[in-house]
Image (cartoon, rainbow, N blue to C red; front, side, top):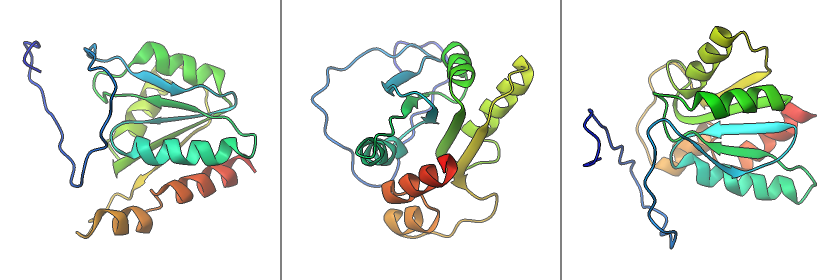
Length: 160
């Protein structure tokens, strides 16, 4: 953030971070990253929920279901180029977020698709548009179906 001459926000979620041996890379503002590439279904997310999504992707792969997992990294600005490709090349696109689905990543992608005239099957998974009580993170993730096994079940139900 020190290199950017723009207002910047760094979000520090509760809980611990996963230690990574990956080399630190400069992230271009508004550019996401593909973490897995599959065929029919794509999951777009941002933040720590990606760890749960990657676990569910591994569970799905054991059943022969390979999904695309895209780390949007930014909600504003969106990586419009890659998101447009995802919307056009997948039968089903699922956004998952640890925020309310109203006014978040899912809403931004739905608005983008509408603006571009892209007809896509887009589903959103996240917190409801209501007061969310406080509590241990895993308890809340379980309540709102944001653990890897919940995401796995949700995707399985979507694809039939």
